[in-house]
Length: 297
Image (cartoon, rainbow, N blue to C red; front, side, top):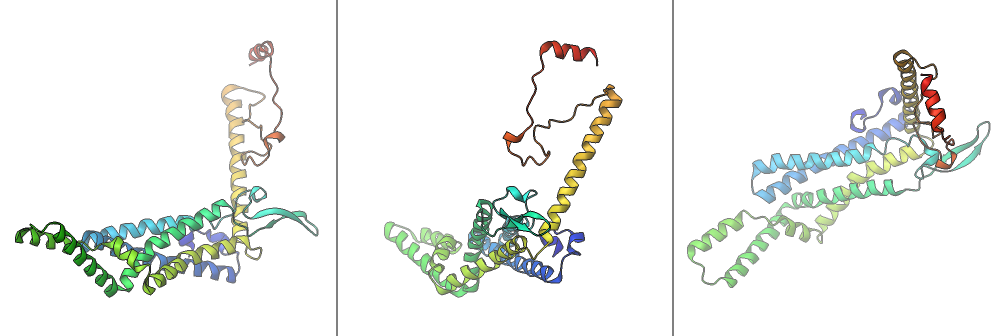
């Protein structure tokens, strides 16, 4: 399950078995949604092209695209914001805690990013559900296709009574290759098999989403917090090393005794979590003072 959601192996070894079990089940259900995506893609492409070869290769590509989109939405649910004190998703207020003062409290209230991810996953589940319904109810789908084909033939002949036998044969040949997938899907949505497929597929797609949301928002689970703390330490270390390299280059290459540091208008670079009103004030240097400073370089 580490590969499915891109989990850190070192942090994985630090969390408890109940948390691991939930990640494992979320990964298994996501893999089931991948199988449904591949099956739906093959079915749709076969109905669209009337070709088994195109259905297999094109359908696997369509299923892969859907699975990747859903996986990206799920992976972003694993991690917490680097500075949760400025996140309306997980932290909305602080609460007192003995010995630690005011500490942030996680909240389960969704913000726009959570709702947007959920909307994308639900939309992907709907795209997969209707071809899956035509697979589960294969005989029903074929009956709808045959009925629609007969209606089209009757309507076309009624509008073109002068058709020759050869033209009639060409019409039948062309319509035999048309499976009317959109019409079939619309018809299945009002049938029990279509309703079941929509709910079943939505569950396979959305259950991992809600499980990961619970895992990162609940205080009893630690992976998201440990992962965030590790990322913050790595960023701080990289930023500090970059500043040290900058100082060394300025001293060795340009001989500056007072090195020029990056813009520190914000109080906590590189995170930029403070208000712009809290930034250090700028000092305007006169032209004379600027030239005098240049002479000392």
